[in-house]
Image (cartoon, rainbow, N blue to C red; front, side, top):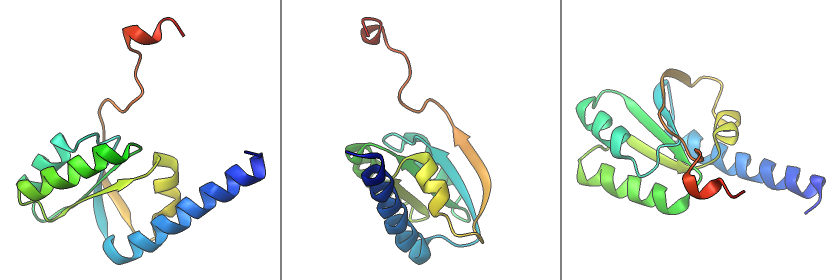
Amino acid sequence: MSLEEAIAAREGRVAKLRDLFSETLKGEITFEVGCGKGHYLSSYAAAHPGEVCVGADIISERVRDARRRASNKGASNAYFFKAEAGEFLDALPKEVLLKKIFIFFPDPWPKKKHRKR
């Protein structure tokens, strides 16, 4: 893939996110970068129903698990998106305010099996 193709692909992903955000995100949000399977944010959203809670992760399966977990907890104020953090932030509407940001242990972090690389 050439640089131009990579830039165009990124712009396409950001545009798709912008479309999704225009339907769901307004005002102030609580954002978790690298939300994984949504353990923390689902519980947080259930405990804080007045906040709009948004999580982003780069792995589709994790995002599906996070959505399921939020649904099981009755956290209808929790939204999860498959997105790289930079693309997510570029796609946010200007009027959306990040009131709280959680960054715990987003992947990748060094693991023993990575030493050989």
